[in-house]
Image (cartoon, rainbow, N blue to C red; front, top):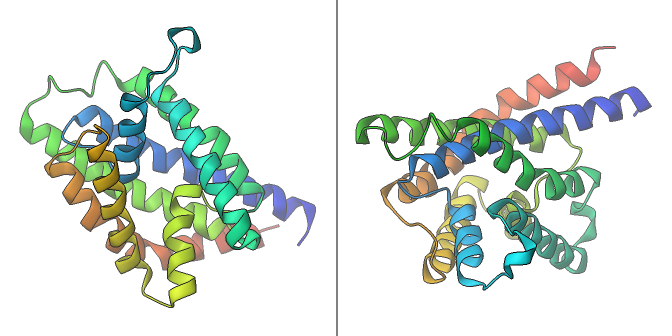
Length: 214
């Protein structure tokens, strides 16, 4: 692979990561229960007594958990941890904070329930699309998405089903720690995996076209 193709891989990854976390922000702002992984993030963020001096945020908690997942994967199978995985770890949280600052006054719990449900479903689709672009960039996948990918690869089970099971685990653990849990969380847990599986071949062709276009 040429240096230009490697740069394109990273650009594709950052683009996909931004799209995915736009979807995550939609979940959070709709306030109907966020996506499964961020239920876990919220639970840890709310249950830990962070010192006020740290000015700790949801985004920083997201980054910390991703770092712990990477450390675990380094012991299980380090081949899954690539440069893109590190980029996802450092940029994921700040991207959520940025989108929240930009969209917070427009997308929030003051909207009607019908609009908030629409926003949440749109967030599921946006997250699924962004996630598949990140995966097919082949620069590395975000730590939270790697959990389902590694389990799927090691057990030889369909990714969509494994994604649903891992999302359910994130929801259960996050809810017990105080994360936001709602109808939207259930919709997300059972929608993102299957929708991502639909997007996967399209994202693969899109990324392949970009990488092969000199």
